[in-house]
Length: 525
Ligand SMILES: [Zn+2]
Image (cartoon, rainbow, N blue to C red; front, side, top):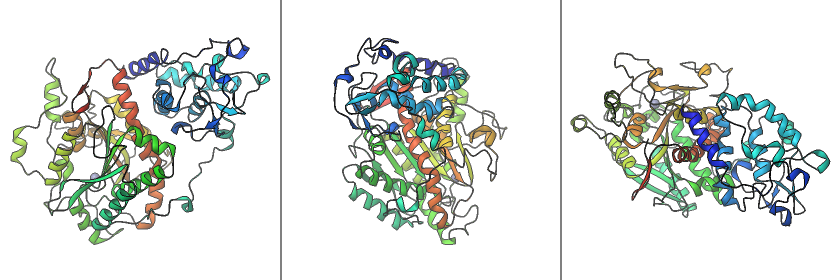
């Protein structure tokens, strides 16, 4: 009953936050007045989750009596609204979010709020109640149709009108892409050059650093985005993306280079969604964890690379089999009453084996920064898989092996899958496995079991939630396919980072112990 607990905690926490001055029903009959009705200044909408509403001006305080953008962004109502899509598995969205925006960022004309129409609210409520019932969740109080919405005779507007007129998916034309993103493959030195350019262009929010070296001595560069580059800030969650762990799976590497360029450029041009993202989260991108393997694969050339050349490091080690196997230990401990299975130590015997310098570097990195959410980007299939990757029964190669946080892992994986048109496209024929019926996600061990993976290690050693994203059937696609791969993944990459806020919020609202150490945010299961 994890999800209802979470939802109950979220909804329960909503009521005391910002009770509006008006009581149910009063606002509509003008028996009371929200403070906003006395103000006279319309301002631009700058809320990331509301940047696609049909109007451009709003006013403070909003209909929940929240007096500034900052107050709104940190409110439980706003966070809940931003994650409703995932909670409801995509049902009723974006309609619900847009409706929520008409309350949290109400339309403003001539210094006055134009309230949304009650009949729009009631129609949506009727359609969506089954989806809420399915997850044992009540209709959110801030979407109370009687309380915040008015009848047409009182002068209202339909916040969903634009949505109904624009059901077609509108893809950005290539000409709208900032010109400095070159959708090409990058050699190691070209990659470093591009990342350095981003760092100097966005030096106030970006920092390039190395977490160690590959076997052949190449620096493993990470580019970080934060309002305080180089420093962990108390309460600010840490996020990471890792690409190219398998040297011949190159799409993740290129996407992370483009993402770095995109984040920098959009922050500079004032994209409020990207600014909110970077203001609230410290984002680390490691485009290539296996640069030696990449160079080997690249020698064969895009489109010609076989299935395996360059997958391993130059020491012939598969990095996603090279981490300590803590999963077996977790299974053993789970059979002992009262034993904890989080923050498991690395067994001494692990160091007797062959440990790649790339693995060591990443282990040291995740030990030094309290990451809470992560994804490792691979290629060769089209699916998001999540821990455990190692089967609960060593002899069963395909066995559903959930962590105690199965529901959270599913929500996180769905967030990426649902935002990706290919993974969520129910009609598409897949390479390899067919994951359509599962919504494009799968428990790793149920797909195929392996030990020594990075995701299980993240979870069991540091409590970081890491999923594995398989970005597509081709591991080393032709250059002309890179632009559309970026288009397919851009929204999913951003949405997944945004899930960090949901993850952290749910930890604080759930009845699990959470603690702050001098190292910063430490979340315990
Ligand atoms: Zn891989």
